[in-house]
Image (cartoon, rainbow, N blue to C red; front, side):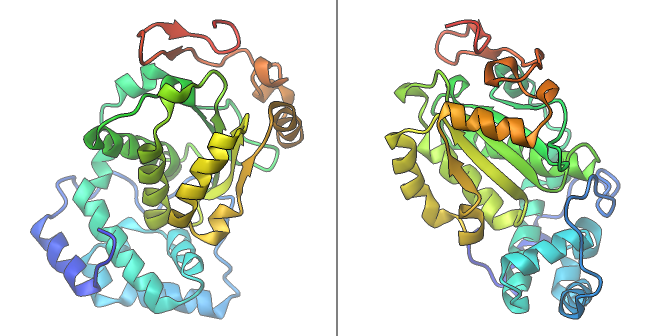
Length: 286
């Protein structure tokens, strides 16, 4: 759902009510804040108040599913244009019902966990941001249904685990391309995930680092960038290996950085090669 009126969103949501019980996910008690709603900003507070009182948004569950910080992020993401933010909220609330968002927290992703594509560094940055690492070498191109499931997996790790108090509200993502080959490339995956977050989770990305960079990653970014808003696009960085190691040394304590990146943390998990099914330890196995 990319373009939708508030009224249409309400109609669709009413046809597909939430299956999960109301208390399946604590909606108004999010976790670690790295952002704050500026209570002294009269326009921001007015938008939040109006969104909560908006009849159609109320029908879509705005007061059951969205905290004030999320409302504020939609407003900021819409360049402080309230009507645009309301429409985007309607789209997102209908989408959340469509995928049954509360149940995503309990969806069985054991196979993806075992694959080792995505993991979290043991501690946040010095500024308190959760760091997620995507290892490209453990991914192979997938069909649309699998990509939609992978997008839900990202939603769980980026959004729902924040709502449950395990992550910061803004995250840093590292795309680790070490060992990746052309057979691991999946441009459709990048489009699906970037579109999902750009549309439904504004202002959640603190920074995204891709390394080691190459002409191919730059070419992919040229294709993907139109799907990403300019503010988010400015947070994307392509670095060589040494430059990334330097960046990590500045951002984090050494014992939270994997040894192969110049740190002292030895807990990086193994991953599963999607073509041979063999378990591989980056930096140790070929």
